[in-house]
Length: 126
Image (cartoon, rainbow, N blue to C red; front, side):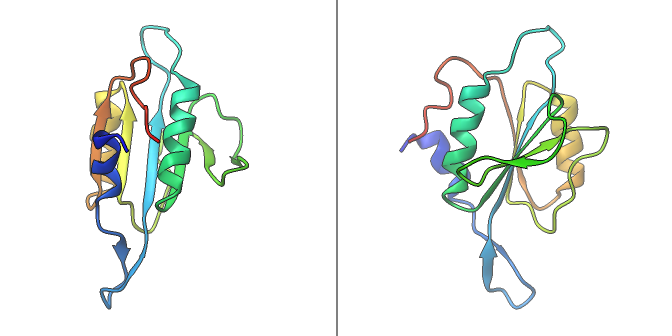
C-alpha cells in the first residue's frame, strides 16, 4: 500500500462515549479549482474507494447535483456553502483549496485535515 494512504487509514476509528470504536468517516472535498482546470475524477474515485475499505468514504463536490452512492458504496454529495454534517469525522482531504481546508478544520475539530494538490498518479492507492 502507498505510505501516503496508510497515513489516513492509520487513524483510530471514531468511538462512542464508552470508548469502543465504531467506524471511520473519510471526507474528500473537491471544490471547483480557481484556475479552471479539471480535478482528476478518476483519481478521486480511486482514493474514495480505497478509503471505503476502512470505513465510510464521502466525496463532496460542486458539480454533484444530488446525493448518490456508487457501486462500491462511496457516497457523493453536493458541495454548497456549508460542509456536510457528520457525527464524527476521522479524516478530511481537501483538494487544492486552502480556504476549504480551514473551513473543514473548524467544522470537524477532531479530524485530521489534509490539503492536497492532485497530480497524475498522486492517488496511486492500492
